[in-house]
Length: 501
Image (cartoon, rainbow, N blue to C red; front, side):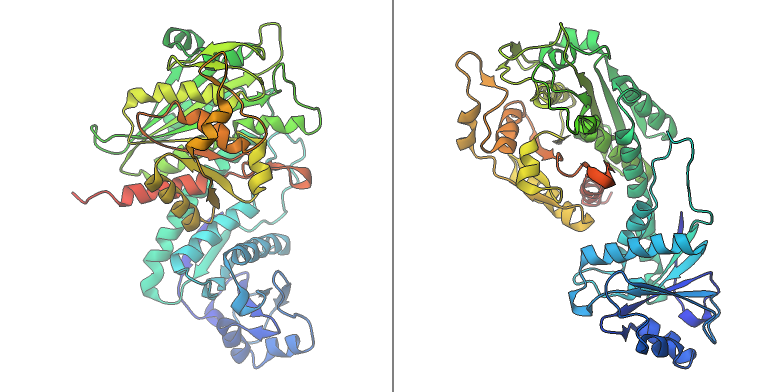
């Protein structure tokens, strides 16, 4: 979809449709009042008869309003003015796009950016509207024989800003939103792919294609033979039961000076997780194709970073692997020697993500990173703790955790910090090895992060558990594209904080 900004009066817009708001109860927004005045009370008369109450999400499409150049006017219910918040604003925009798609309007001018959202400016409102619009029209139809797309879908959306001096701000918001949206789409597309197509080699192919698309990107690939030489025994053990070779795909974005320490993103890429010998129950096991959501999120973020051409060095690691039961599979009771030299007693082969990540986190030491953030659908305990709404943030470095949570608030991609106290470390002690790979049911998300923290002593590190936020199940099953907005915002903030040359 194409987006633009302009500043002008609603009655003078020659468009297939104008979008304006109505508050509850039956109260016109300032722009809607302008249209009502030029149409000599046409809109207010309709509302007075009860055609629209103004409740959030209500829609009323009007045709050929007197003295208005636009063919249609879509009245959008915005709820009670004082209760309008960020979440409701995005929902209103999404519902508006869905309605416009069904009306046959191929272009529209939206005046919903006039709505007051507490603490948010024009940039935020335009950016969130573009991201919400792209989100609402996303489909995954690659494997359907009948596509079923709308007959006349919305092609162009123009957002009106209050004054001409805010046009550059609106244009910047669209540029940023489009980059984030394309990153989100890349994340969703790979995560939604079935595991018989999306395996570690497929992740590598996508990474290679991305590097072909952008000049700032280069690809480094680590296969099983190289992992063996490096001593990545923990990573290799997880994939031993699969016919698909484990493969680590490393995307380098060189936007900064050669001597600038990179920010490294490490994504868990379990393209299917059966649980291994500790096999999962069959119910919803199909959703374990989403266990590569961390790698998908890193791939999407690298897409956005390259499109924005951020002036920093970023490395994205897709730690591809598949966990399957087989005669060669690793077992509960095995003791693995990790790349770091530390030993791990395997108590459950379904706690495999941390065994892949610990070697990947040791591997990235060679880049002498400024910061490392790992992203993983790591624990069911995170879903119990935070549901599907917030990504868990755990970090041994307070300023980094603060920056990530701040980026989550700016991007409306919610995150919540959990403690990482030493008190929890004793839960993963083992009588036979340096540590066990699980610490029991209590505080499962925290003990998983405690495990990873033992491999991150040489740099600033944070862990994002996206088990609750990477995908939705049920009737709305599909990847969400999170945490691409949050990670991209974090990296944009880092880039903007650099001293000017």
